[in-house]
Image (cartoon, rainbow, N blue to C red; front, side):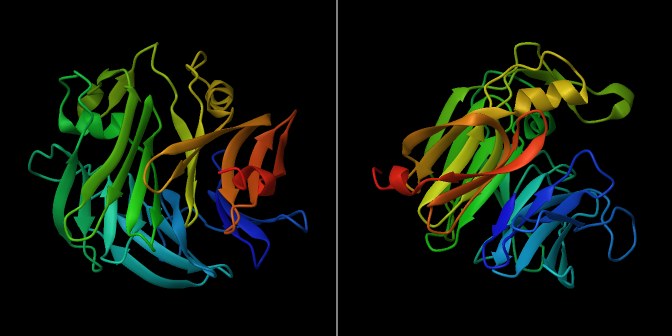
Length: 301
């Protein structure tokens, strides 16, 4: 979920609607479609929110098209960048792009991340997968450790969290990306699943749902963490497992400085630029937007 304070709106993914992305004006109770599915030039096959590019534009990635699209709030497309390979998540940096989860690179890829230049050309891979003792191949690990990424342009650092287990990593990018901090507290539980020749994994019953959203300001990284197990393999069961009351706050050295506990179960989060307000999509008999005052909390950090 991405916040545009001046426009008083947020852009969020919508998993249960014909519109894959929504624009919500939170002071007007107005919801508009922000993307259309399809194969046309202005449509997306598999869109995901990537990051705020600036105060009036957002980056969207289309996994199936191997494409990164920059779109303004009025929905005008200003650029399309085609990447050499399919990927699961990405961020734009000063140097080009960092992606996590290369899926169709021909040679064996044992690294978790990759650098691409501004034209979308592959540069190099970096970053080892966590040493989880699982002997599955690189493609399986790619699926097991997929998640969310956030970028700090002032420090040229990115944070990444996994959607299974409890995995947090922080990198300094520069010319040679360097791991600054990592927490590998709980590993995903998974096995290869190659039915009908597909690349994929099957999670074990004891697998823990990990981080379900991430948001970054210039000072902090906010990560919504579940820690639940998936007991029902249905949409309702998945949503229940992803809802969480816990937001972990990290500084940009990788130190976990606080755990915020909400009295509402949260699904997505975003934070004001000054860190004084957290806006979240939460659940209380139905989905609602909630605002949390952090001004007194951050003064203690």
